[in-house]
Image 1 (cartoon, rainbow, N blue to C red):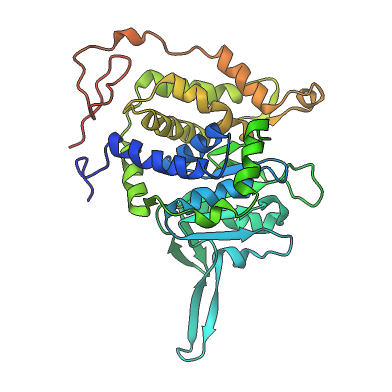
Image 2: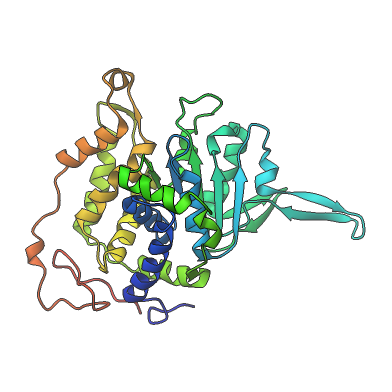
Length: 348
Protein backbone atom coordinates (compact mmCIF):
# COMPACT_ATOMS: atom_id res chain seq x y z
CA UNK A 1 0.00 0.00 0.00
CA UNK A 2 1.35 3.43 -0.94
CA UNK A 3 1.87 5.75 2.01
CA UNK A 4 2.05 9.53 2.04
CA UNK A 5 5.84 9.50 2.42
CA UNK A 6 6.24 7.27 -0.66
CA UNK A 7 4.35 9.59 -2.91
CA UNK A 8 5.84 12.27 -5.08
CA UNK A 9 6.13 15.74 -3.55
CA UNK A 10 4.96 18.86 -5.30
CA UNK A 11 8.60 19.67 -6.03
CA UNK A 12 8.90 16.41 -7.98
CA UNK A 13 5.61 17.15 -9.73
CA UNK A 14 6.77 20.56 -10.86
CA UNK A 15 10.01 19.21 -12.28
CA UNK A 16 8.41 16.33 -14.20
CA UNK A 17 5.54 18.44 -15.53
CA UNK A 18 7.95 21.13 -16.66
CA UNK A 19 9.79 18.56 -18.77
CA UNK A 20 6.58 17.33 -20.35
CA UNK A 21 5.34 20.88 -20.92
CA UNK A 22 8.55 21.93 -22.64
CA UNK A 23 8.44 18.82 -24.81
CA UNK A 24 4.86 19.43 -25.96
CA UNK A 25 5.37 23.17 -26.49
CA UNK A 26 8.28 22.33 -28.77
CA UNK A 27 5.68 20.88 -31.14
CA UNK A 28 2.68 23.13 -30.46
CA UNK A 29 3.90 26.71 -30.81
CA UNK A 30 2.16 29.65 -29.20
CA UNK A 31 -0.45 27.71 -27.20
CA UNK A 32 0.88 27.46 -23.61
CA UNK A 33 -2.59 27.65 -22.03
CA UNK A 34 -3.80 24.70 -24.12
CA UNK A 35 -0.77 22.61 -23.14
CA UNK A 36 -1.24 23.49 -19.46
CA UNK A 37 -4.89 22.45 -19.54
CA UNK A 38 -3.91 19.14 -21.15
CA UNK A 39 -1.45 18.43 -18.35
CA UNK A 40 -4.02 19.43 -15.76
CA UNK A 41 -6.48 16.87 -17.12
CA UNK A 42 -3.76 14.20 -17.20
CA UNK A 43 -2.86 14.68 -13.53
CA UNK A 44 -6.53 14.90 -12.53
CA UNK A 45 -7.17 11.43 -14.03
CA UNK A 46 -9.55 12.82 -16.62
CA UNK A 47 -10.07 12.65 -20.35
CA UNK A 48 -9.59 15.51 -22.80
CA UNK A 49 -11.76 16.53 -25.75
CA UNK A 50 -10.03 18.74 -28.33
CA UNK A 51 -12.53 20.43 -30.61
CA UNK A 52 -11.68 22.76 -33.47
CA UNK A 53 -11.66 23.15 -37.23
CA UNK A 54 -9.34 20.92 -39.28
CA UNK A 55 -5.68 21.78 -39.60
CA UNK A 56 -5.02 23.66 -36.36
CA UNK A 57 -3.05 20.87 -34.65
CA UNK A 58 -5.60 18.84 -32.68
CA UNK A 59 -4.04 15.48 -33.49
CA UNK A 60 -0.55 16.96 -33.22
CA UNK A 61 -1.27 18.07 -29.65
CA UNK A 62 -2.63 14.64 -28.70
CA UNK A 63 0.36 12.84 -30.22
CA UNK A 64 2.88 15.21 -28.64
CA UNK A 65 1.38 14.66 -25.20
CA UNK A 66 1.34 10.89 -25.65
CA UNK A 67 4.89 10.64 -26.99
CA UNK A 68 6.30 12.80 -24.20
CA UNK A 69 5.40 10.04 -21.71
CA UNK A 70 7.04 6.63 -21.85
CA UNK A 71 3.85 4.55 -21.88
CA UNK A 72 1.73 2.50 -24.27
CA UNK A 73 -0.07 4.58 -26.89
CA UNK A 74 -2.83 3.58 -29.33
CA UNK A 75 -4.43 5.72 -32.00
CA UNK A 76 -7.96 5.06 -33.25
CA UNK A 77 -9.12 6.70 -36.44
CA UNK A 78 -12.88 6.95 -36.05
CA UNK A 79 -14.80 6.33 -39.26
CA UNK A 80 -18.48 5.54 -40.00
CA UNK A 81 -17.69 1.85 -40.52
CA UNK A 82 -15.73 1.43 -37.27
CA UNK A 83 -17.26 -1.28 -35.05
CA UNK A 84 -17.48 -1.28 -31.24
CA UNK A 85 -15.45 -4.53 -31.16
CA UNK A 86 -12.61 -2.71 -32.93
CA UNK A 87 -12.32 -0.57 -29.81
CA UNK A 88 -13.06 -2.97 -26.95
CA UNK A 89 -11.80 -6.23 -28.44
CA UNK A 90 -13.43 -9.52 -29.41
CA UNK A 91 -13.22 -13.21 -28.39
CA UNK A 92 -11.55 -15.37 -31.04
CA UNK A 93 -11.80 -19.14 -31.27
CA UNK A 94 -8.48 -20.86 -30.55
CA UNK A 95 -8.24 -24.12 -32.48
CA UNK A 96 -5.47 -25.58 -30.30
CA UNK A 97 -7.04 -24.78 -26.96
CA UNK A 98 -10.55 -25.33 -28.32
CA UNK A 99 -11.73 -22.30 -26.43
CA UNK A 100 -12.35 -18.62 -27.00
CA UNK A 101 -9.41 -16.28 -26.40
CA UNK A 102 -9.98 -12.58 -25.88
CA UNK A 103 -8.10 -10.32 -28.27
CA UNK A 104 -7.80 -6.84 -26.72
CA UNK A 105 -8.92 -3.88 -28.80
CA UNK A 106 -7.28 -0.50 -29.27
CA UNK A 107 -8.63 0.81 -25.96
CA UNK A 108 -6.09 -1.30 -24.04
CA UNK A 109 -3.39 1.35 -23.81
CA UNK A 110 -2.36 3.98 -21.28
CA UNK A 111 -2.92 6.88 -23.66
CA UNK A 112 -5.61 6.40 -26.30
CA UNK A 113 -5.89 8.95 -29.10
CA UNK A 114 -9.35 9.02 -30.64
CA UNK A 115 -9.00 10.96 -33.87
CA UNK A 116 -12.21 12.61 -35.16
CA UNK A 117 -14.37 10.78 -32.67
CA UNK A 118 -17.58 12.31 -34.00
CA UNK A 119 -17.15 10.63 -37.40
CA UNK A 120 -18.10 7.26 -35.90
CA UNK A 121 -21.68 6.14 -35.36
CA UNK A 122 -23.28 6.65 -31.93
CA UNK A 123 -23.15 2.88 -31.36
CA UNK A 124 -19.37 2.90 -31.75
CA UNK A 125 -19.00 6.05 -29.66
CA UNK A 126 -20.86 4.36 -26.82
CA UNK A 127 -18.20 1.63 -26.71
CA UNK A 128 -16.01 4.12 -24.86
CA UNK A 129 -18.49 4.84 -22.06
CA UNK A 130 -17.52 2.04 -19.68
CA UNK A 131 -13.79 2.34 -20.27
CA UNK A 132 -13.72 6.10 -19.70
CA UNK A 133 -15.73 6.03 -16.50
CA UNK A 134 -14.80 2.72 -14.84
CA UNK A 135 -11.45 2.08 -16.56
CA UNK A 136 -12.48 -1.41 -17.53
CA UNK A 137 -14.02 -3.27 -20.47
CA UNK A 138 -16.73 -5.94 -20.25
CA UNK A 139 -17.02 -8.39 -23.15
CA UNK A 140 -19.23 -11.50 -23.06
CA UNK A 141 -19.75 -11.15 -19.33
CA UNK A 142 -16.02 -10.93 -18.51
CA UNK A 143 -14.42 -7.77 -17.18
CA UNK A 144 -10.91 -6.72 -18.19
CA UNK A 145 -9.04 -4.00 -16.34
CA UNK A 146 -7.38 -1.24 -18.35
CA UNK A 147 -3.76 -0.21 -17.70
CA UNK A 148 -2.92 2.68 -15.42
CA UNK A 149 -2.54 5.58 -15.92
CA UNK A 150 -5.32 5.70 -18.49
CA UNK A 151 -6.32 8.74 -20.53
CA UNK A 152 -8.42 9.26 -23.65
CA UNK A 153 -7.49 12.25 -25.78
CA UNK A 154 -10.19 12.67 -28.42
CA UNK A 155 -10.38 15.16 -31.24
CA UNK A 156 -13.46 16.22 -33.12
CA UNK A 157 -14.48 18.68 -35.77
CA UNK A 158 -17.34 21.10 -35.08
CA UNK A 159 -20.66 19.28 -35.21
CA UNK A 160 -22.00 21.41 -38.04
CA UNK A 161 -19.40 20.02 -40.46
CA UNK A 162 -20.56 17.45 -43.02
CA UNK A 163 -20.24 13.74 -42.23
CA UNK A 164 -20.16 13.97 -38.44
CA UNK A 165 -22.35 12.61 -35.63
CA UNK A 166 -22.84 14.89 -32.60
CA UNK A 167 -21.50 13.33 -29.40
CA UNK A 168 -24.37 12.32 -27.09
CA UNK A 169 -24.68 14.00 -23.70
CA UNK A 170 -23.47 10.91 -21.84
CA UNK A 171 -20.32 10.79 -23.97
CA UNK A 172 -19.51 14.48 -23.50
CA UNK A 173 -20.04 14.16 -19.77
CA UNK A 174 -17.23 11.58 -19.60
CA UNK A 175 -14.68 14.15 -20.77
CA UNK A 176 -13.27 16.21 -17.94
CA UNK A 177 -12.51 19.23 -20.12
CA UNK A 178 -12.90 20.50 -23.65
CA UNK A 179 -10.33 22.76 -25.27
CA UNK A 180 -10.12 24.55 -28.59
CA UNK A 181 -6.65 24.98 -30.05
CA UNK A 182 -7.55 27.98 -32.20
CA UNK A 183 -5.57 29.62 -34.95
CA UNK A 184 -1.96 30.52 -34.10
CA UNK A 185 -0.66 34.07 -33.99
CA UNK A 186 1.32 35.41 -36.92
CA UNK A 187 4.59 34.98 -35.04
CA UNK A 188 3.76 31.41 -34.01
CA UNK A 189 2.68 30.54 -37.55
CA UNK A 190 5.91 31.97 -38.94
CA UNK A 191 7.88 29.87 -36.45
CA UNK A 192 5.80 26.85 -37.45
CA UNK A 193 7.01 27.24 -41.03
CA UNK A 194 10.61 26.97 -39.83
CA UNK A 195 9.99 24.05 -37.45
CA UNK A 196 7.50 22.02 -39.50
CA UNK A 197 8.65 23.03 -42.94
CA UNK A 198 11.11 20.15 -43.22
CA UNK A 199 10.80 17.18 -40.87
CA UNK A 200 7.91 16.82 -38.44
CA UNK A 201 9.10 17.53 -34.87
CA UNK A 202 7.11 14.49 -33.70
CA UNK A 203 9.72 12.23 -35.31
CA UNK A 204 12.43 13.48 -32.96
CA UNK A 205 10.21 13.70 -29.89
CA UNK A 206 11.51 11.47 -27.08
CA UNK A 207 9.76 10.53 -23.80
CA UNK A 208 10.71 12.82 -20.93
CA UNK A 209 8.66 11.10 -18.20
CA UNK A 210 7.81 7.51 -17.31
CA UNK A 211 4.38 6.08 -16.62
CA UNK A 212 5.28 5.25 -13.02
CA UNK A 213 6.26 8.90 -12.48
CA UNK A 214 2.85 10.00 -13.71
CA UNK A 215 1.20 7.56 -11.30
CA UNK A 216 3.12 9.06 -8.39
CA UNK A 217 2.17 12.55 -9.47
CA UNK A 218 -1.49 11.55 -9.66
CA UNK A 219 -1.24 10.34 -6.07
CA UNK A 220 0.31 13.66 -5.06
CA UNK A 221 -2.53 15.58 -6.70
CA UNK A 222 -5.07 13.51 -4.78
CA UNK A 223 -3.55 14.84 -1.54
CA UNK A 224 -4.06 18.49 -2.48
CA UNK A 225 -6.24 20.05 0.19
CA UNK A 226 -9.59 21.66 -0.67
CA UNK A 227 -11.13 23.73 2.12
CA UNK A 228 -14.84 23.61 2.87
CA UNK A 229 -15.60 27.07 1.35
CA UNK A 230 -13.91 26.08 -1.91
CA UNK A 231 -15.83 22.80 -2.08
CA UNK A 232 -19.08 24.67 -1.46
CA UNK A 233 -18.12 27.15 -4.18
CA UNK A 234 -17.72 24.28 -6.65
CA UNK A 235 -21.14 22.92 -5.71
CA UNK A 236 -22.75 26.36 -6.03
CA UNK A 237 -21.32 26.87 -9.52
CA UNK A 238 -22.56 23.52 -10.77
CA UNK A 239 -25.96 23.94 -9.10
CA UNK A 240 -26.38 27.32 -10.81
CA UNK A 241 -26.19 25.64 -14.22
CA UNK A 242 -29.27 23.57 -13.37
CA UNK A 243 -31.49 26.60 -12.73
CA UNK A 244 -30.13 29.09 -15.25
CA UNK A 245 -32.90 30.32 -17.60
CA UNK A 246 -30.67 30.02 -20.68
CA UNK A 247 -29.98 26.30 -20.13
CA UNK A 248 -32.26 23.33 -20.66
CA UNK A 249 -29.65 20.87 -19.36
CA UNK A 250 -27.27 21.69 -16.53
CA UNK A 251 -24.11 20.01 -15.34
CA UNK A 252 -24.20 16.60 -13.64
CA UNK A 253 -22.73 15.58 -10.28
CA UNK A 254 -19.88 14.06 -12.30
CA UNK A 255 -19.08 17.60 -13.42
CA UNK A 256 -18.79 18.63 -9.77
CA UNK A 257 -16.20 15.92 -9.15
CA UNK A 258 -14.33 16.77 -12.33
CA UNK A 259 -14.18 20.47 -11.49
CA UNK A 260 -12.81 19.81 -8.02
CA UNK A 261 -10.22 17.31 -9.29
CA UNK A 262 -9.11 19.70 -12.01
CA UNK A 263 -8.79 22.52 -9.46
CA UNK A 264 -6.58 20.30 -7.30
CA UNK A 265 -4.36 19.49 -10.28
CA UNK A 266 -4.14 23.19 -11.21
CA UNK A 267 -3.14 24.04 -7.66
CA UNK A 268 -0.41 21.40 -7.73
CA UNK A 269 0.89 22.73 -11.06
CA UNK A 270 1.04 26.15 -9.41
CA UNK A 271 3.24 24.76 -6.63
CA UNK A 272 0.53 24.73 -3.96
CA UNK A 273 -0.84 21.86 -1.91
CA UNK A 274 -4.17 23.61 -1.38
CA UNK A 275 -6.76 24.77 -3.91
CA UNK A 276 -8.08 28.31 -4.25
CA UNK A 277 -11.27 29.72 -5.78
CA UNK A 278 -9.01 31.10 -8.52
CA UNK A 279 -8.21 27.53 -9.59
CA UNK A 280 -11.92 26.76 -9.86
CA UNK A 281 -12.67 29.93 -11.81
CA UNK A 282 -9.83 29.35 -14.28
CA UNK A 283 -11.16 25.88 -15.18
CA UNK A 284 -14.93 26.37 -14.94
CA UNK A 285 -15.48 27.13 -18.63
CA UNK A 286 -13.31 24.26 -19.89
CA UNK A 287 -14.88 21.74 -17.49
CA UNK A 288 -18.54 22.78 -17.59
CA UNK A 289 -19.37 24.39 -20.94
CA UNK A 290 -19.32 21.26 -23.12
CA UNK A 291 -21.84 19.53 -20.82
CA UNK A 292 -24.49 22.25 -21.05
CA UNK A 293 -27.36 22.55 -23.53
CA UNK A 294 -28.67 26.08 -24.17
CA UNK A 295 -32.38 26.64 -24.66
CA UNK A 296 -33.82 27.39 -28.08
CA UNK A 297 -34.29 31.03 -27.12
CA UNK A 298 -30.67 31.29 -25.99
CA UNK A 299 -29.53 29.84 -29.30
CA UNK A 300 -31.66 32.38 -31.16
CA UNK A 301 -29.99 35.10 -29.11
CA UNK A 302 -26.61 33.51 -29.96
CA UNK A 303 -25.84 32.82 -26.32
CA UNK A 304 -23.18 30.13 -26.07
CA UNK A 305 -22.62 27.77 -23.17
CA UNK A 306 -19.28 29.47 -22.53
CA UNK A 307 -21.01 32.82 -22.08
CA UNK A 308 -23.51 31.28 -19.69
CA UNK A 309 -20.70 29.86 -17.53
CA UNK A 310 -19.01 33.26 -17.48
CA UNK A 311 -22.30 34.78 -16.37
CA UNK A 312 -22.60 32.20 -13.58
CA UNK A 313 -19.05 32.95 -12.45
CA UNK A 314 -19.91 36.64 -12.14
CA UNK A 315 -23.11 36.03 -10.19
CA UNK A 316 -21.96 33.30 -7.81
CA UNK A 317 -20.41 34.68 -4.59
CA UNK A 318 -16.71 33.87 -4.30
CA UNK A 319 -15.30 32.66 -0.96
CA UNK A 320 -13.28 35.53 0.45
CA UNK A 321 -11.55 36.40 3.70
CA UNK A 322 -8.31 34.62 2.77
CA UNK A 323 -6.51 36.76 5.32
CA UNK A 324 -7.87 34.53 8.10
CA UNK A 325 -5.25 31.87 7.35
CA UNK A 326 -3.16 31.55 10.51
CA UNK A 327 0.53 32.23 10.17
CA UNK A 328 1.41 29.11 12.15
CA UNK A 329 -0.75 26.77 10.07
CA UNK A 330 1.20 23.52 9.51
CA UNK A 331 2.72 23.07 6.08
CA UNK A 332 2.29 19.78 4.26
CA UNK A 333 4.93 20.02 1.56
CA UNK A 334 6.86 23.18 2.25
CA UNK A 335 5.24 24.96 -0.71
CA UNK A 336 2.05 26.26 0.80
CA UNK A 337 -0.43 26.07 3.63
CA UNK A 338 -4.17 25.45 3.92
CA UNK A 339 -6.39 28.32 2.92
CA UNK A 340 -9.33 29.86 4.79
CA UNK A 341 -7.93 29.11 8.23
CA UNK A 342 -8.52 25.36 8.16
CA UNK A 343 -6.01 22.66 8.98
CA UNK A 344 -5.90 19.81 6.46
CA UNK A 345 -6.41 16.29 7.78
CA UNK A 346 -3.16 14.38 8.16
CA UNK A 347 -2.81 10.97 6.58
CA UNK A 348 -2.25 8.14 9.06
